[in-house]
Image (cartoon, rainbow, N blue to C red; front, side, top):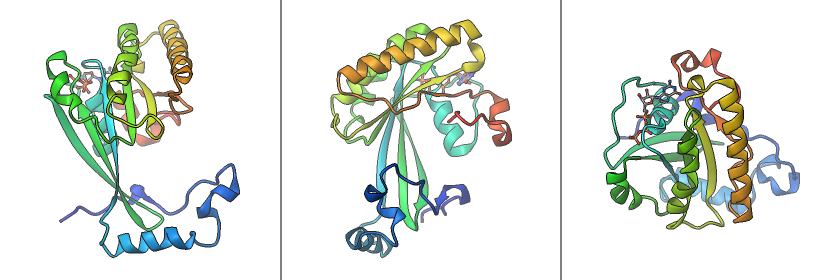
Length: 219
Ligand SMILES: Nc1nc2c(ncn2[C@@H]2O[C@H](COP(=O)(O)OP(=O)(O)OP(=O)(O)O)[C@@H](O)[C@H]2O)c(=O)[nH]1
C-alpha cells in the first residue's frame, strides 16, 4: 500500500513556459495523446511516472542531509556514513497525474564507490554535491560527474551542482567558491553538459529547516 501524497507535493498548476506553443499545459486541456497517456496511468495500467535522481559527491559533503531535508524535513547533526547506497521515494501529483521521484543517495567513501556506481544507470537527473567550505570537494565534482555520466544518456540527463554547508563558509570563501563553481559550470558547457541554470546553494543548518525562514534560493 502506497502512502498518500503530501499536500505540498500536489501541483495543480505549472508555471507558464517561455514559448506558449511549446507548453501543452497552457492550452485548454492537454494534447489528446498526452491526455490519453494520463488516463491510462490513472487507471493504473502503466503505473506511475518515475524519475530517477542520483546524488553523488565527496564523503560527508551533506548528500544524505540534503535528501532527508527534502523528503523528511529532517536534519541529522551526527554524521553516519552511507554504506553503498540508500534510497528515498517522494510521491507527487502533477496536474492529477501520479509522479514519483526516486532519490538515490550514494556513498562518498572511496571503498563504496564500486557498489554505488552500479546504481548510476538510467538516471533522469544527476545532482553533484559539494561543500561550500571545502574547495577540494568542488575540485572533485567534475570527476563525480564524469563517473555518473558514464552509464547515462548525456543528451537527456539533467545536471545540478549543489553547494552545502553555507553556514560554515566565510563570506570571502563563499564568494571564491561560487566563482569556482561558475567556472566549472562553464567548462561543462564546453563538453555539452549543462548544469541547471542556477547553482543552488543550500544551508542545511537547523534555522533553515523552519520553512518560514528558508531562503528562496535554497533547496
Ligand atoms: N554545518 C552544517 N553541517 C552540515 C550541513 N549539511 C550536512 N552537514 C553535516 O555534515 C555531516 C555529513 O553529512 P551527510 O549528509 O551524512 O554527508 P554525506 O555526503 O551523505 O556522507 P557520505 O554518506 O559518507 O558520503 C553530518 O554531520 C551533517 O550534520 C550544513 O549545511 N551545515
